[in-house]
Each structure stands twice: as structure tokens, then as C-alpha cells.
Amino acid sequence: MEHVTDNIDVLVIGGGTAGTIAAVQASRLGERTALVESGSQLGGVTTTGGVSFPGLFHAWGQQIVAGIGWELVTNAVALDSGQLPDFSVQPPRHWWHQIRINGPVYAALAEEACLQSGVQLHFYEIPTEVSETEKGWKVETVGKSMRRTIMTKQLIDCTGGANIVGVIGLPRLREEETQPGTLIFKLGGYDIESLDDEIIQAHFLAAIEDSRLQHGDVSNPRGRFIHFLRNGGENAQHVFEADASTSDRHTKTNIAGRQSLLRILRFVRSLPGCENACVLKAQPETAVRETYRIVGEVQITHRDYTSGRIFDDAISYSFYPIDLHDHDGVKPKPLSEGIIATVPLRALIPKESRNLLVAGRSVSSDRLANSALRVQASCMAMGQAAGAAAALSARLETTPGQVSVTALHELLIQHGAIVPSLDMKKFRDKAIKKK
Ligand SMILES: Cc1cc2nc3c(=O)[nH]c(=O)nc-3n(C[C@H](O)[C@H](O)[C@H](O)COP(=O)(O)OP(=O)(O)OC[C@H]3O[C@@H](n4cnc5c(N)ncnc54)[C@H](O)[C@@H]3O)c2cc1C
Image (cartoon, rainbow, N blue to C red):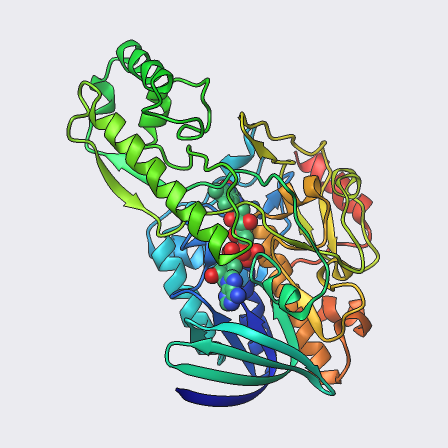
């Protein structure tokens, strides 16, 4: 077994939506940075999970999230001859402002950005032990035929489930009943215009009745199956009790997602006109909407989120409806006109910890606030703020809770990010006027 020892300033665990951005930011600030990822590529839910439609970077006609995430997303759009939506007006459906990207292109660009900024990438590794030292952390990882000991000043947990916070033994929150997950796939091989809506619907109801299809195979069971077919079933399936909080639970969730795909494929191929239906794409894992959230120095509540509370230490904006999925699908609750939520630095700091940050969907928040904060633009913005806070802390030999928010804002602005305006009223008035 090979054994490697590294000495660095900032270690990011989890190279997903938030972690990639955190690592690039810390490294661009000149700190020795490494990124440990248990999978084979960067991007997490954005790429491996197939949710390749990040949002929301704009609110009420203005951009509210930019920086490294925006740079990668727009580069991915350009390299794939894609198109950005018109952001100048607030659309009636929030998802019209989500940006369609090519997942594999995004993963490759994210990797390139890491390499160009000097991030040391370690795929197929997972931390087994994490202990506090006088100057930061000692992290032991295990990979394929190798072990690594990493001495780091600052640690950022971007595992999407606060896995490292769990290894350290700090408290985390988790719901007994989780939101459903989704295996992202796309079906094809049929001509939608030639299908008979009524006949298809009758077959669909019969298949539900005799259990060829199960509840969740179609996330909106009261909708018409022709709509499911029109989009090839993409992001229109639910896996109930989806959970990625342990390897066992994630294994079960992945198996349930693929079994559902097989039921759907067999059923679709039984429909008149769909005999040659096929799977055009299917992701290697079921994407999960929630696992653990941290208990931070501050918890963002539903009220904070929907009132657009401006925290004293706000480091990024977040804009998305409250979006809790359940057994009957989802009914998003949009924010009131002019409202934009903010994320405080203290919500990224596990309570009573030192030299530790968390970014991404496990941000300290109650369940309803989290159903909105978890989206990708918000996670990317948190990732960039965490990367900058960790780099600043490493440089000044302090802990993220002690860094000056003004200094942090300055660094973030220098690196293209948008930070919450202290004069939010002016910002809101401008946004509403523009609308
Ligand atoms: C079905 C579905 C639909 C969604 N729809 C949208 C949408 O339309 N628009 C939108 O913006 N957002 C959407 N979201 C939300 C959003 O995609 C996620 O909440 C967000 O991407 C989470 O980012 P993250 O960085 O916190 O976690 P992730 O992207 O999950 O990244 C975590 C990374 O950490 C790695 N990891 C985990 N544990 C370890 C470990 N112990 N050691 C090393 N590495 C580890 C994982 O492999 C992964 O790469 C959706 C989510 C789901 C599931």
C-alpha cells in the first residue's frame, strides 16, 4: 500500500457543485490547495447527478451570483454552442432562468480550472480519520492501493452531506423522511407527434393499477403521461426515501432508481408507437435532494429566507422558490417581489469549530429554507465564499469566524463574485424599478 504525506493550506473534501468552486478560489488566492473527491470527476449533482441546469444566477432583472461558478457555467455554454436565457425580466416560471449546460463539458472545464490554478486533485479517495492539530487538521484518506496523510491549516467540507463534520463528531441535522431523489435519464426512439394521447393515458392508468408502474416512477402521477414522454422522462421521476447519508443508503437509493428506470422502459416499450423506445442517457447515480445539514453558528430559517433578511455577515445571495418535493410532486412557492435571500458566513461555520467551513446544500438552515438554498448557483456562491474565507484564514493564521467580512467581500469582488449590498433597499428598489 503506497503512503503519501502532503502539507497544504486549504483542503476541500468533495469536488461537487460547491467544492470545485471553493478549491479554485482558494488556489487562485495563492494558497496550497488540494481537493479530495470520492468519485471520478468534478461537479457532483451538476454532472454525475445529471442536474445540468444550474440556477438561479439572476433575480428581478439583476445578476445576483457571478464569480467562478458563473465563469465555468458560461464557458460550458459557449463551448457547447448553447444559449443563455434572457435575464432582463423575471419570467413567470423560475426554471426558465436555469441554464442548460453539457455535463461532461462542465466537468472537464471545472477540472481544467483546478489544474490551471494549481489545485492538487485526488479522485477516488475518501477521508477515514480527521483530527485537530495545533495548526489546523490532520486528515487521513484511503484510495485505490494507497493511503494519504494531509496536514492542512483549513478544512472545507463540501461533501453535500456534511460527511466530514460527521467524521469529526460535530452535530448534524437530518429528517426522518427525506425528499424524493431522481435518477436523471432521457428516453427516445419514438415519434411523439404520432402518439395518441388518450390511448397512452389509458395504458398509463392500467399500468399504475396493476403495479407495472409504481408510485414515483412518474413524479406527477396526476399528469398526462404524454407530457412525461414529450421530455423523454427527464427529471420527471421520483425515488422515495432517497438518502445518501451513508454508503448503504446511497446504494439502496441507486438500485431503486435503476429499478424504476427498468419499469418505465418496459412500460414505454409496451405502448403502441413506442416499441423501439430506448434509453438515450442515464446517470450513474440517483441524485438526492437532502441528507445532513450542519448546526452552524447561525441557522438560516424559512422566515429569514422568505423575508430577504440581510445578515451582518452576509457573503452571498440566494434566489429560488421554497421547493420541497414530496409524495405528490412539488409546488414551488416563489419569493415575494423584490425579495432576495442572503447567506451569512456563520451559516457555513459548524458551531464551536475552528478552521472548518462547510459549503453547499448542507449549509446551516431549517428544512424549508434549505429546500431553496440547496440550488446550484447558491451552492457555487457559498463555495467561492468558503474558499476565500479559508484562504484568508490560512494567510492570517486565524479561523474563518475571525476574518473581517469587509476584507472577505473585497477579495470576493476582486475574483468576480457579487456580495450582498449593505444598502439592500436601494438594490431592491432598483430591481423592482427595472422589472
Ligand atoms: C433531482 C434534483 C434536481 C435538482 N434540480 C435543480 C435545479 O433544477 N437547479 C438547481 O440549481 N439545483 C437543482 N438541484 C439542487 C442541486 O443540484 C444540489 O443541491 C447541489 O448541486 C448540491 O451541491 P453540493 O456541492 O452541496 O453537493 P454535490 O454536488 O452533491 O457534491 C458533493 C461531492 O462530494 C463528494 N463526496 C461525498 N462524500 C464524500 C467523501 N466522504 N469524500 C470525498 N468526496 C465525497 C461527492 O462525490 C460529490 O462529488 C437539484 C437536485 C436534485 C437531486
